[in-house]
Image (cartoon, protein in one colour):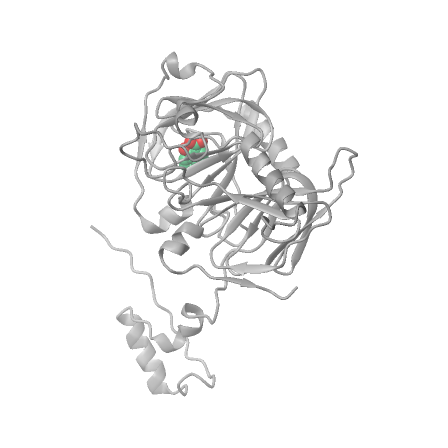
Length: 379
Ligand code: 1HN
């Protein structure tokens, strides 16, 4: 077996915190290079910054552009065994062209043409779907067909078998989120192909999945559930319930009883109904609603997030960058960059002036490792 040696290159530099540049130091550094050794005193600033400095940068992808390109892919790129999915990933401009939205998170637009199937497989990577518009696809999770409609959030924890089929006469696009970049560095990934065809029972199109019928009742746990999967046993969080939860928070606030995270800002986390924990072991998902004219206080957090505008329009600020955003637009908040959002009335009369933001992040990983920190910035 051959091994590849990555050369070590050490540059003696003249600086207050560095040793004097002498022939003896140069010779010492050549000795380090020869033996593949790196001294801490040349690296400490990069390895131990005073606060996180993300390799990722804030970036925005416009939904219109993603959808247009995905539709073109739908015309010319088949879906089938091998490629598995017509998914087109967001690549953070400072992560070397890899399909990584952030150092830990994958985000992609997936597109399925009328009548098409995305074949069954399973992998250790934890995944979810979020539907910003459209309908007509059923995702089949461990043999349970689950409908996908606008506003629905569908977690698929690692190692579940899953396939998708579009039974409608229209193409459908949605957002996929996975922890692929995180699992890539952990080197703990497994993947298996499933069956080439789904059964007739799996190709049915119920309005509610078995999972929703068992687990979709607030506060009620089925006594038949003796063992639990690694993520949420509820395979769909329907928009009807998310929307009502946000509207109810704002109504409670309007009555003077709090209930929101800050004035005019309602928010919910998608939680595992069996445990109350995050829906996926490595991914947190939330929905935020800002009423007309509301804004959030700038906040920094360790770990990274991807946001998608679900409805309305507004301005979001990530670090030094601000964007006007509207339905479907996606953007990245790298670790420890400050984030704030403000709702703004859009150009259409039907626009409520509010802003609904879907967010997913790697927070469960940071919390489990005691690395989660949040800091409110002075506005
Ligand atoms: C995957 O299985 C799906 O099941 C979506 O829809 C995106 C990206 C990389 C690897 C597997 C899906 C994926 C993926």
